[in-house]
Length: 68
Image (tube, rainbow, N blue to C red; front, side, top):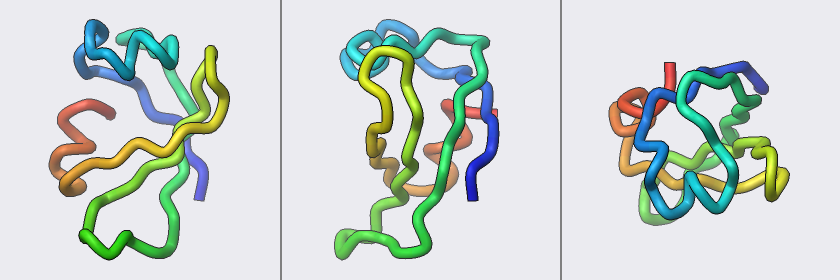
């Protein structure tokens, strides 16, 4: 399921800069039906510079610290 989320995380993070994600902007985020073997919470994010990227989070709580 794809949904729009607003980025509220660290704009100075290495990946955030590489992908062109800006705080306060909306991006399309999709969650896979399957989780990885390490039980990470993955989000597929459509970014302005790179396109679709897989962003691993340790949990849904970690995701919501960066997105609303």
